[in-house]
Amino acid sequence: FIVFSVILVSLFLCALRLRSSLAEQYSVSSNPKDNSVSSNPKDIPKNKIVTPTRNSSGDSDKPIQVAYAISLIKCSDKQSSTSGLIDAATVLRHSVHQTSMRNPSSGSKYDYKMYAIVHKKAESCSHLLGDLGYHIIVKDSPVQTSEIRGDYLRKHVHKEWCCGADEFVKLFAYTIHDHPIVVHTDIDFMYVKPMDDLFDAMLLPHDSDEGKAARDKVEMEYPDKKQSMPEDIQAYLTRDYHQVIPGRKAAFQAGFIVLKPNQKVFDEYLEIIREGNYVEGFSRENGWGGKGYGGVVGSMAMQGLPAYYYDEVAPNTSVELNGCRYNHMGANIFYDNVPNFIRKYKDLHGKCRRNVEGCEDCRKTDMSLIKNIHFTNCRKPWNCAGCKEDEQCTGKNDHIDPRTADYDHCMQVAKTWHEMRNDLEQQIVALTGNDKVLSEGQKGSYKKDVFMGHCDADGQSGYVPIAASKENMAVTVTKIWKETK
Image (cartoon, rainbow, N blue to C red; front, side):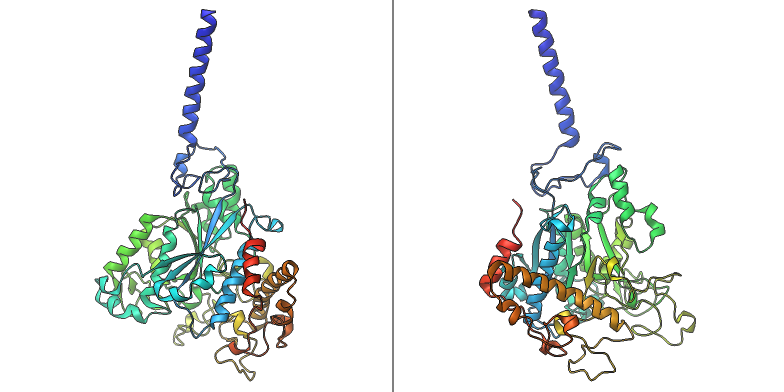
């Protein structure tokens, strides 16, 4: 009996040691700001396949919840009416929902939570986003102009498109620590397909079979660089090639980024802004750090700064995505017209602004290949931009510019948004029985094959807003977009 007891005790102690060892290898912090999957591949045993299935709370029964954020810097501008911005935020949220696991037909395994980073100047209208289920984060600009030490940046950043130093409020996306991944976009954006491949490649060990498979599916701007993809991907971004002169450095496209929250990155950005080392002019040594990240729209703010950061300050931590598939704008990226077109550079005329051969023409990208859309060159769908330049356009500056975009492609792009809005409207009617959502919200007759009744004339003034009542939208938030339990 004594010998038997000793054996039992020995077995019990061995089991405890084994459990302790496993706990050390696969421990999940009790801090809700820690990711459920380590962001450092060295923390995970080599060749061990770990599929991320937990949310940030560590509850293994819940899927990972990705933060989808927008920034609201001002309540309205000349590009959009207030009703247009509200509907933009509504359709954006619905597109996130439709491409998430809450819509079983999407095939996604990721859940979502909506955030709006609101500049204090726009706080008065932020309740409109709150009513749509966005979690509101009110912030002032993280760096005040008076704090900037560099003379040129301090004196000129307020003139930068669209919002001067106020646009730096977007950087607060790096501080949404309750989620392993944050996707930040402008409000004039929509999702067409899930981004599970991007999320998997970020969270899975780079050398696991699943991690390798996910990385192989990431559509990069330069596929030949796939072998040099970072082991620990901190961000995905696209570049604003349609502005750049071939051979010059392209700015970041500030309307879309996928990132891992990181306080250190946020702090480094702020110190770069405070230092204010920005060189004026259009030489190859202009812009941030005198490294050539300047001379284009937005370069003093969120177009130039992230490009400089990920190229010069934190190299080999980000992945540049194919800009025709992700953050699709339908823009002309060949050097044959505006912007920044210099006629005397005849040897560059017709060349791809990426300065490579075999450039994909984003004006002709098949719609079935597009993951998400940023409504810039093809105009805002809620501005009813259905007019060609050679037609009599009633909407000021709302026509499709043939120098930078293709009209027929832009009509397909606009229709995709209106189809998403129609899907939401149909679901609201099915749930509430309020037929006015369709009879009043789809009463427009202008180019109905494209705008689906949401426009009664060309231009911003011709837009027909969503006709759902406040009560209908409350039901939408709680029933159609209901959270997973």
